[in-house]
Image (cartoon, one colour):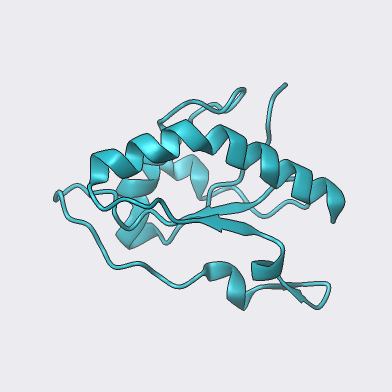
Length: 121
């Protein structure tokens, strides 16, 4: 069964990190797209949404970053904060390779859960 996923990230600091996650390729039916194609994607109410903190994934300069704020706290849908609806995941490791491995082992189940949440709301 193909899953519908929406990737969102702060472009300048996280493009490299987000590309690493996108290219894990474990989500059934998830075809990778070029970075330019990502910019054409908009929010669609038929997609499950989840958040993954990727600050400990290294960027092109092999650097990690500080953990950012939950971006869903500033978005409301039908007078509800998206932070109350959307689950976010913060891998419990600091080394980039361990974070990447943790995400790759769990992202498929996280997407399944986001789809269940979408169907309930």
